[in-house]
Structure formats: C-alpha cells, structure tokens
Length: 443
Picture (tube, rainbow, N blue to C red):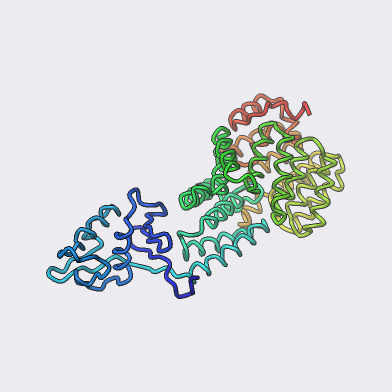
C-alpha cells in the first residue's frame, strides 16, 4: 500500500505525465499514440528521478550491457520520438561523459492524491447543496484538487462541469452561459479522456448538447450512450428525463426522474425535480404531494420551494404559491423565484407588483448578485401580465442567451398566453423542440 512518501508519477515539460502505477506516459491527459515499451519507460523514469543530474552512459544501471555496447543513445532517441520531441529538448548530452534530464519535473506523491481526494469529496458535498455560494465553493475545491492531482480524478472534472453549468443556468444566473458552458464542455471532455467509460462525463456532454446547443439529436445519442455505460447514473437519468419531457414523452420522463431519485437519495435537486416532472405531465396534485415531502426532508433548500410554488400555482392555490415563492426568496434571493412571484402577481391583476419584480431583477444585476438578467425570467413576468409582444421579445432574447429552460417551451403551461402566436411557434422551431407546440393543450 502506498505511503504518504511514495511517488506515484512525474509531471514534466509540455504537459507530459509519467504514470508510475500504470507504467505509461500521458500527454495532456491522453496516452501516447505509440506507448513506450516497459524498458523504455524504465529508462525515462530513471532520468525523471534525477532531473538535472549528469549521468554517465555506464551509470544507467537498468540497461543490459552484456552485448558489449551501451544502448542508452538508442533508447533516448526512441523515447523522444514517441513523445514527439527532439531528443535534445529533454536529454542534454555532455560529450564523452553522459546525459542529464533538463526538463522541469514535479513528482506526484501518494499524499497529493489523498489530499486531492479529500478536496474532491468536499466539492461534491458542496455541489449537492445547490446554492450559488456552495457551488462556487465546490468549483474552487475541484480546481484545487485537479491542480494537485490532474491525472487521476476524472470525477473532479465532471463535478467542475456541473458547477459551471449550474452557475450559468437561468435558475442562478451567476455566470454568463457563453463563458462557463464551454469550460464545462472542456472539463467533461477531459474526464472522458482520462476515463473513456465515464458515463457521467458523457452524460454532461449530452446535457450541454441539449440545454446550450439545442442539439436534440446529439443530446439523445450522448445521453443514451451514457446510460448504456451505466444505467444507474442518477445525474444522467435526470438529464435524460429533461430530454424526454421536452420531447413530449412525459410518462417516461416521470419514470426516469423517479429512478434517479431512488438511486441517489442525497442529491437535493434530483428529489425536488421529480415533482416538476409530474407537473409537466399534468398532475399538479402529485407534484404538491412530493413537494411537501421534499420541503419536510430538506427545509433549507430554496429551489424546492420554487418548484412547489409552481405546483400550487398550477392548482390555482395562489396564496400557497405566493407563500412558497417568498419563502424561497428569503432563503436565497434568486431570479427564478423573483420571476415566479412576478408572474403570479401579473396573473392576479397586480400590475404594479409584477412590474416591481422586473425592476428588482435589474437591481440584482446592478448589485452584482447575478451576472446577467435572464430574459426567460422577464418573459415569465410579461406572460403573467398577458403582454404578448414583450413576452415574445424576451423569449427570443433568452434564446440568444442560450437559456436552458427553453427546452420546455412546448410543455410549460405558463406560456399558454402566447402559445398560438406565430412567433412562439417559430421560437420552438429555433430551439429545435421535438414535441408539437400544442402538446400542453392536449393533455
């Protein structure tokens, strides 16, 4: 068993990592196209253990010299060729004496991995809390874990990707989607490089294809393939549930979300979302039942109150809906809770109160509480006020913002005031929603 002083690998110049446990070299996280032989790896590791030290040809004791000649020169040239560098870039020749390894070398210790693992576990715990502050903490911890151990923690890349995605979504609006979604995609791709069987990494890529690219065909392929790798991946099941719901396959979406909740009882957003899918399927009563249960289990979780408020609003229990929107705002002042309250106030004919929420959305941005004003939220308030053109203007701008919730356009009942408008139908086509635009009316 490795101790804290055990070296498990070496980082050296140009993004190379010599993995001492698997006896292989990675470049920028990917194995060499032509791997080193075992003996070639031994020679490279011999030099990595003594960077900058002049070593005589005869001093490389791991080589077999029974043939009467020293094969070191040949080994070094073949190692350099497989790494894709000139031999002189790594091995400095002192004529008549020997070689020294001149690249920068950083040994990776078992203790580094232990520290990185602890940081990663903490980052996952903070991510599952799903508040802006906790996800920022998760992001910071995952980045640090990868700084310490960049080659052995594919799951840290996945958690980072989810952090970036969530911070950029409409629900939080804490970062600009155009800045964080490409970072999320890169981290998911990095995880997949390290572990080509990572269902979670492929699931993240599928989620990005769906909610950022509006690439339904690509998302379907990635999510299905991810679930083939691991049918019990709760996060990917939730993403697939969103795909199924947006596709009009509502009963399947409900089942996928329920399965995800059974698999991971610790993920608060998964459990809160089950009621949301029942609401999409037209069962506000079941959504309320589940929402009240989640409120009892996770009383400090702000999104649970928003989703429960949506269910109460759908059931025409407006006072209960308002109470839950306001409770969510008390716990975390989010744009989605504010917009939901504004939408309800507009429906109830309280125009001044509804418009005040639009002003407050702008003030959130001005105060730096959010990084952008999500036009989806503005559209919700205008829909409540039954101001069709302003609502559609805002929805079209939400599309330009790569709003994640536009995938639910066809099934979200709050868009009924503009559903028959040609501009709304064009927007559905622009987002690529598979479900027919009249689906919500047919339920």
